[in-house]
Length: 418
Ligand code: PLP
Image 1 (spheres, protein in one colour):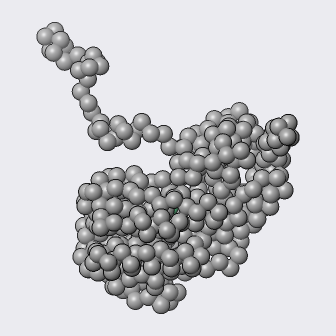
Image 2 (spheres, rainbow, N blue to C red; image 1 turned 120 degrees about the vertical axis):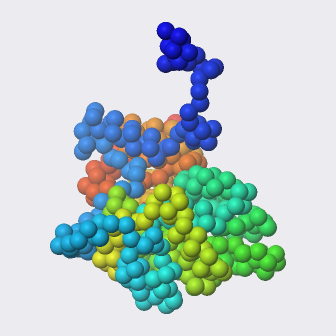
Image 3 (tube, rainbow, N blue to C red; image 1 turned 45 degrees about the vertical axis):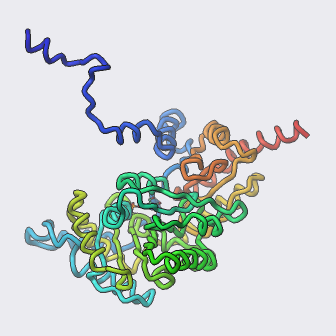
C-alpha cells in the first residue's frame, strides 16, 4: 500500500532515522573493561562452574551486613500508614539527616546540621547532583590518575572538561608538582577519593596537605573558588591503623560524598549522601541547587526504606577484619608467587603490575587460569590490573596456585631470555 511504501519498517541505512544521541552513540562505542571482565567471568562459570572461576572483577561487597540493616527492615514492617512509603522532603527524612549530621560531628568535630545533608541514591547520584549544581560547560574538573572511570563520564554529562593528574610512579600517589601546573582559572572542582579505588591506598596526611596547599595557592592568586569534592564510599575500610584524611578540616570549600554501598554491604539498595559544610562559600545556594538537581535529574528523593537502613547504620559498619583478612591473604599469596602487588591499606582493591608491563597479555594469561582481573588502562594506570578482594577467603586461597602458574610463565620467559 501507499502507506507501507511511505513508511517502510526498515529504512535503508543512509536514510535511517537516528534515535539515539551522538553522545550516547559515542558512549556505546567505548567498551567498559569492568563490565567486560564481569561478563567474561559469567561465561567462564558456565564452563568451569562457579567454584572454578576466581572472579576479582567487580567491587560487589560480600562482608555480612551490620545488624542495623535487618533491624531497620524489621522496623519498617512494623510501621503503618501510607506515608512510610511515600514521597518526603527532597533532601530526605529530617531525622535521618540529623542522625548523619550528629554522627559526622561526633567523629570529626564538624558543625553540620540536618540542613547540610542531602540524602542521595548512592555516591554516584551525589556526584551527579553536585556536578549539575556547580559546573558550567567548559569548567575544568581535576581528577587524580588512577581513578574511578565514572568520573569522566559524569563530568562529560555536564560538558565539563576533565583534567587528569598523573601519579608518582614510585608511590602511585598524586604527583603534586603536576597538580600545581594543572590548576587554571577554569578549575572549578577537584575530586579526591581515599581510601582509593583502584590502588587500595589511603592518602597519607602529607598528600592531603599538599593537595590543599596547591588549591589554596591557586585561589589566593586568582580569587577563584575551587570546590574540593571528597568521594569517600570506602571511608571506614582502613587497615594497618592508617588514618584517612578528613578533608573538610583541611579545606573549607569541601563537599563530602558518601555511600553505604560498601560500609554496610548494601550497594544494591542505593543509599548515600552529600554533605555541604557551613564553611563552603554560598553553602545555602549549593544545597538548594543540590536539592533541585535531585528532582530535576529524576531521582526525586533517596529511597525511603534505604534511608532507614542508613540511619540504623550511621555508626555501625561491617566487620572490617573480613576484608583485612582477604587483603593479607591475597597480598602475601601473590608475593609468595613472585609477583609484586602494591600493598594497599584501604578499600578492597589491590593493584598488580604486569610482570613485563604488558597489561592486556597479563589479563589474558590470568583468564587462561580462570582468574578475572580488570585492566588498569580504564582507571588511568596501564601496565597494571585491579583485583577486587571482596570475595570469599576460600576463593583467594584456591586462586593462589593459579596465580603461581601465571607467574611461572613469566619467570620461564625471563629465564629463557637470560
Ligand atoms: N566512587 C567510587 C570511588 C567508587 O568506587 C564507587 C563504586 O564502586 C562509587 C563512587 C559509587 O558508589 P555508589 O554505589 O554509592 O553509587
